[in-house]
Length: 467
Image 1 (cartoon, helix red, strand yellow):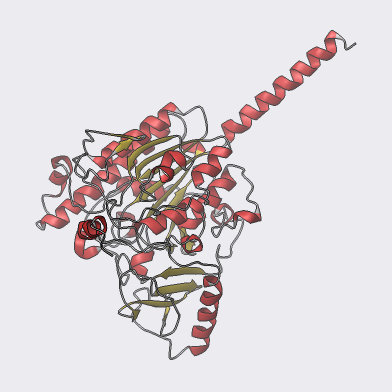
Image 2 (cartoon, one colour):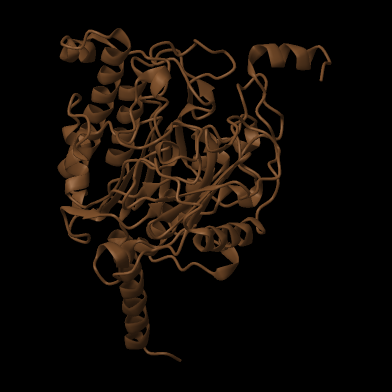
């Protein structure tokens, strides 16, 4: 028979283990992922190209950590980029190559494939509480809803765009709290930030993942007088409204940062900030600085974006890093910070950036980065980029074609960030090397699972039994 002392010692040991487990959980950093929509590379004041619109809060976030001047996304527009971010895998691996078109016209199987695990799934399994606030664009049907994809809380919309002031503007794509439509939103940029702030306050005693996906600064161009009044010096109405929208988003980022500080979570939160693609300049004035091209193109203007990362006390501040990174790196970096091992069978394409931003590793995180978007392709390896894009060997638009490197152009981005001087004829061996690398990467990809439906006319034709 065991003595009372024995039982006391066992009880004490178990208490210590439980306490240690809770302490370990408490040390897990929170993860905050902020995504701007259609924000051009040249717009944030920290980029130094367009000081017309001050963005002090995003600038401060980047200054507190590292700003990647060669930060990329794996998609040329909304939904594919988000699919890659959520999985840490090139979205072409699982057929998520294109947007779906509007909700009423999209194919029923549109959505981040259900066999793919999300960042929410991964961190929820590691003991995190998870919240998603803002745009989804990863599936309209119930199985694809954020609450079914590893997230405990959701406030936002499932489509690709939404009115900023009217919750009921699109009956096919309502603003949802959980799964229930919301009647009043105020101004979406502020509303999504408020929900994120509430989530951060509510879960301050436990590790959390907050995915804050603004619809700013995507069309339609809409703002309130509070922000418009800041830019009375801008005569062009379109540009003035864009400036107001960007200023509102920056204010909201500041509100979220202030909540982290007020709740004592500033040093225990790993923060990422990116845009989902470059700016569609003609539609919204969102400019890409010195870069060639726009949203939905594999020129730098479509895929190189503002990209920042901060973890106060862990990542040295005021870094400007030109090594190429990509939004696929967010998931493995977050998992590493949370102490979650990554088995090979997950087949992640992203890498853990922490040893690179802390100075432990000096080499580039990636040997090469890759893109495929219909006919358009690109590969960046070192300073060199092989690319086919509109005006450079490929047509615009989404088509189920067999993409090839034939006719691709070659640029040295270190000397020619604007992709103006095609060096393919002068560097045939380099073209051959990059083309072979792209072909090898593409072997592991699959054909796109859908082609975007086009508007309400397509929906009406579909309902009428047309093809």
